[in-house]
Length: 340
Ligand code: AKB
Image (tube, rainbow, N blue to C red; front, top):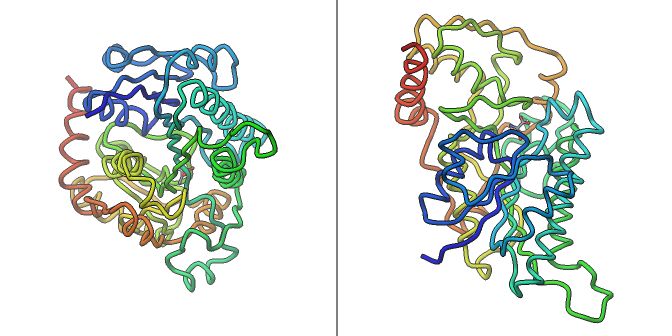
């Protein structure tokens, strides 16, 4: 294995923790960025932790001194948070990404090789006008229904184009060769479910919130209808998707952005599985009209055949395996250690 230097933004977030562990256990050197300091255990895994805002030039400068081979740019303001503060969402999601694309370009030029830029995009880039259409359309392909209904979806779709632009077209009118310094690749994540962290500010949060509340014997008001349906994925599969896409030979890739799927339960399917493990779970469906509308605009599932064909994507966890093998053992241990 060749040891790489990897820059990880949003290291303290939902995906960040698991990805940091995975990258460092695989022997790579990780420079982490987050608004908040990392736990002592996570900090110990890193070459350096830069605590600060991705919009701050000092933060960019501190990261740029490293000869970075790969960037996993996870820092973002999720869909509900961006909908509550669209201008802030735009600044964090678009200006933040632009900062790191420019950093990747400068580092790539300095070290003379393309910096791989791994980008977590989202099913929020899709926008379906009505529930009838959602049912009729079923699984969406990458280029279908790209009419996002949230600031977050708009930002992420634009970032996908920025990544393509910086990889293929940036400064194309200059005399010197200026492309080839960034190799941008991304997956469109469905809702992610982690045993260790509960996301903040997303709209797919009802699934992880329901599960974590039940495991802590806390009541939970689910903010979507029982029939609400979008795709979900267990965190280990999500992290593996990013690292497998990073490792894929460039010749095998036919696109820069891929759909990835795993399972597509309704909220009531999740409720049923939760109740098997936690029969006393106190979950009530109290739909919030606005958050429900966001979920209704996202597809019920994705067609991920391009990822399967090009780089062998295959989820290991369906809903049942996510519960039985990943969530239950870890979540029970997590909350029983809190009770000690
Ligand atoms: C959100 O709900 O905003 C995210 C997403 C689906 O991208 N989890």
